[in-house]
Amino acid sequence: MAKRAKKQINLFYCAESEELARKVANHSDVIELQTISWRNFDDGFPNLFINNAHDIRGQHVAFLASFSSPAVIFEQISAIFALPKLFIASFTLVLPFFPTGSFERMEEEGDVATAFTMARILSMIPKSRGGPTSIVIYDIHALQERFYFGDDVLPCFETGIPLLLQRLHELPDADNITIAFPDDGAWKRFHKLLMHFPMVVCAKVRDGDKRIVQIKEGNPKARHVVIVDDLVQSGGTLIECQKVLAAHGAGKVSAYVTHGVFPKRSWERFLHNNTEGSDDQFAYFWITDSCPLTVKDIANKAPFEVLSLADSIANALQI
Image (tube, rainbow, N blue to C red; front, side, top):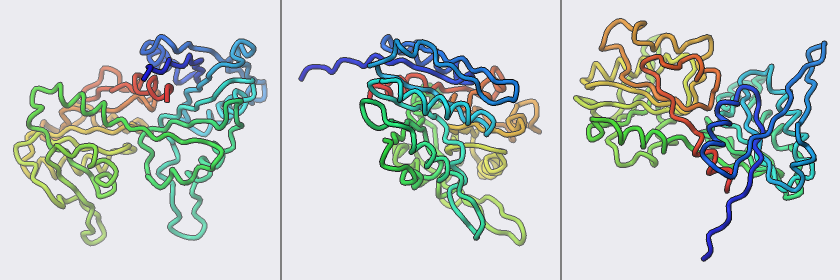
């Protein structure tokens, strides 16, 4: 069977994602970067211009987005809705981090499930000449959210776990790794991708008015334990898991999350010079570059390492 020719992709990007976009282009000789002029009128509303709009007619187009805050979403949505109408062959939206993913359910009347709202907005992206828009998202917070998208778009759900597996293989103690999950939810979504590692599952249990982390199953003793989850916000749960694992004899503890959100610079609490002693330190803290602002903040700061999604995104654009 003849090998399928690769698609030539014109990749647009938001300002925050420029560094990642350049990395994606460097991973493939069929991806050409295109630009949008991100300007504002005097009243603050977007004044956007898609450069080379005529030149992309009949070509495959993608947009690399970063919905890091409500302030930047509207201007990107405006560009995303405009691109498919430029007589292009196909359109792919790459949104590495689906930001409202942790707000996917109602616990009492009056709660607003903003994950559903965001999915509905993206489901209204106009069709290109080639058909529905493809939407590439990495490690969406709740698996049921794939069903929030309408039939007029094609969600493609990818994972950053292969990047972690590659990095673990490079470690000097690669044969002494145990994977830990902070709760049952993380175990359900990731354990099948990590089956060949010993596992520890933690759980939050109520102790009076407090909720404490305990080991539900597995033994971390003398192992290099890597806590795996989809995202981190304040990091409180990860820190409590680290303490419990260390108390049960873990040789050292590291962490991996696909999305390092870290609001209000909460990443600072993980820096080696901000922890009380070696028993409270993470040996490694791996994140991907799905949240570009965090990547800039933690650059060259131990224990953080960034595992880039660039190659994975370049491959996803060929699907």
